[in-house]
Image (cartoon, rainbow, N blue to C red; front, top):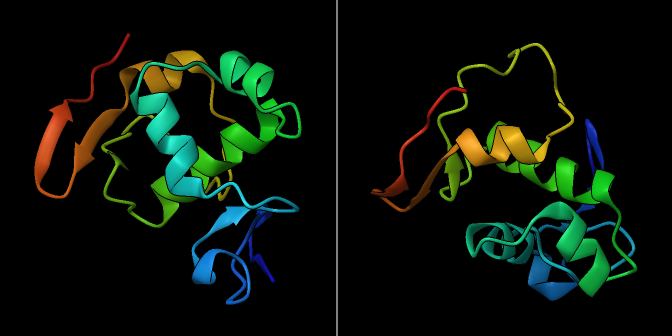
Length: 110
């Protein structure tokens, strides 16, 4: 079933053990975040995985932010009333990245 407010994110116990995935694929949200954390841009990810779209990548980030995913936090410039903001490479570039309690890169503003 798709996640309310995030039509590009699906949680289904029969797909990847119920881990959130990009709707219509078996690409886990955590894998999208990992590719971005590894330095890939949305354009590069879509080129490598042509069944994904840039809006899929944006919504994966928005979902991670809205659910306080441990990899993406600290985005104070986002409007909290916007349930699914469109992420840009610049926004991601300035987001805090953390794994668990360890901050990999603190948030910055341009």
